[in-house]
Amino acid sequence: MNIVDSAAAIPTRAADNLGSIYRKIGFRLIPILMLLWVMAWIDRVNVSFAKLQMMDELRFSDAVYGLGAGIFFIGYLIFEVPSNLLLQKIGARRTIARIAIGWGATCALMALVTTPTAFYALRFLLGAFEAGFFPGVILYLTLWFPSNRRARVFGIFMSSAALSGVLGGPLAGLIMSALHAHVGLSGWQWLFILEGIPTMLIGVFCLFYLTDKLKDARWLSLEERAAVAADLERDHAVLGDREHHFGSVIRDRRLWAFTAIYFCVIVANATVAFWGPTIIRSAGVADIQTIGWIVSGASLLGSAVMILNGFIADRTGRPLILCILSLLVASVALGTIATFLHTSAVITIVAFAFALAGAYGTIPVFWQMPNRLFAGTAAAGGIAVINSFGNLGGFLAPYGLGLAASETGDVAGGLIAVSLIVVIAVFGIVAARRFFTPGTV
Figure 1 (spheres, rainbow, N blue to C red):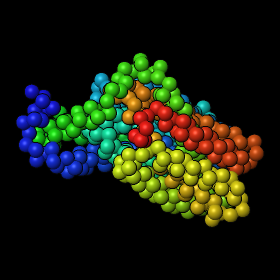
Figure 2: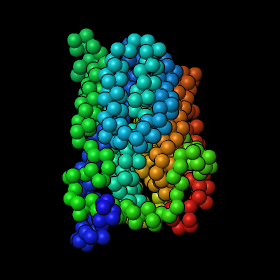
Figure 3: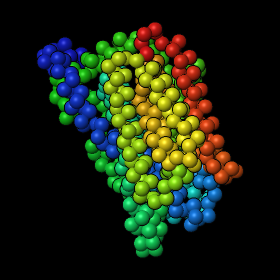
């Protein structure tokens, strides 16, 4: 008799105490996944702080930096779907460990960069290794939490992206200022080394700590596992018939509609992530540590908005309106930055904080929508397709702004373009309402 079959024989006490069981699951899984996502974002965007030193030392142009920052997402695109499908076969534990060890080692090797070619190659490899982590975690969490509890779980987990800025900004400023020229290495080299090695160690720890499936969770009692299994079965029944086959979902226009929307969303995210320190410096702030603290404060606001949006979405069952409001805030804020970039440091910094909060706050509520349409292998592949092709926006934004800055000496025009792209995402989400039963999003 499996866990679900035995649920009828389980005392109702466990079923009546589902909230505490899900909190127990959350306390077991979410902290380590958040820590890894913090490290992933730190290792992904620390190049935006390294840029403040390495550009002059290596004589890289803004266009070289933009291409290197963005080429990360090409590796991401190529390896995202295979990685997520592999997770279905070998489990989350080994997949997440492999990913973390690989990207941590690549981050540390960034300290050896001396040429644009090496810069491009290692950024590509960083994307290739990290590919599959985010959609893999999203899929992994659906194995533990029903749909009516996922938005807040997604919001808490995804707030790690913003928390990485809270921690990563001051840490980058400290490392680059305190260790510059120590034992012959520049501050930006120490930055890559000291932020890459811990990720590798956390990856090794995951091999022994994570649990692949509910039935293997010995840290839950049999009663607790049975109650959760029954609740997940109930949730599957409530959601009704969803697409399960990857071959079918690839031909589903809904998948590609959400991919296009996510592309626009990631353009905004990548803009604030990879050009944030440069925007703050352009506004007139020269000290690297001060820039780090400003980015930290903006990221703290972004983290709070992500968590808040997740809780509100679960409480109201309406992720769509929250997604639209967050994107509108990001669009207006980006346009404000472009307008006041060289005339008011205060307005620019405040607008940057709102742009980051709006762009980041969109993510947890966005993922609630495609997750209501697909299940099983279709969800694994579909999430990976949306994330990988959508993340091409992460290539376009850094590279496009880098070209604009190289040609005009300013990023203001590029920021206006990003603001308009975000508006396109808003119209896309409004149009996507027809994919759902009225009143469900």
